[in-house]
Length: 316
Ligand code: 13P
Ligand code: SF4
Image (tube, rainbow, N blue to C red):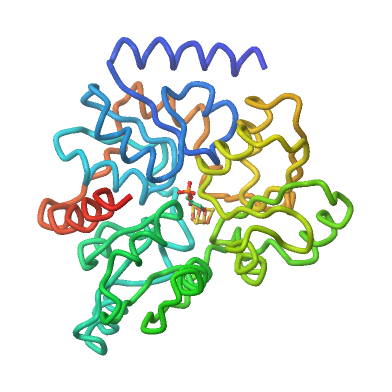
């Protein structure tokens, strides 16, 4: 404990001395969230990256998130504590697969989740996040075919809510959210009838529940489909005492910290993203002191990808 607190102090001193801002995703380990200037979801952190005055961003999250920050703020330097921190969802479509798919649907509009590589984003018409996917799809004229990628559960939820029939959905998934099983959830909800249920739209087993969530309840429990930051705001503002939370367990740290009188029960204790957990205090310190692990997106890719991201930002 003493070692981690002195490392934290040293990181806080160094980031001030070097004028570096630290952004951390809501799934990061508590120690890393503690030394961050801002925590948030993918969308919020990208916006923050564009707003902050510092010229260097140390991004504590996974690679596609740091890339998105670099695309939005090309004049800034973005560092990541571990360049290998990937994402199974973003790995679920390759650039050749996307180009072939587009060839089969030459008039379709492509909408891609933010959990994609910069190269994939450079081939998209629109980007979206869990917080705004429904609004992005609603903004596309009804007669246009849509290719939605890569998350099939988010895609099927969006298709259901918008009633879109001409939407083709890629069969990708996040192994963490796909691993949360229906029995984990029903067991917890049945034992806590007064609990509110919050779900991240990448959850697979919850797809039927998500459909009900569009109507606001599932088997008696109030349900909401939200991004990670949306969940934090929702549980804070809600009058409920108990919450069952279906997403990566890193979110529970801030939930408990901000709401000491409420109870948060993970839908599955095993829902842990090993990529997010690759970011440790030691790696944060090393990246900061050596100013290493810059995330570089080639200009021609970044310029094309920025258009899709900016269209999304204009909608949400
Ligand atoms: P959020 O944008 O909701 O934070 O989700 C990011 C993510 O990777 C979910 O697994
Ligand atoms: Fe990717 Fe899933 Fe990890 Fe989120 S939780 S970063 S979608 S692997």
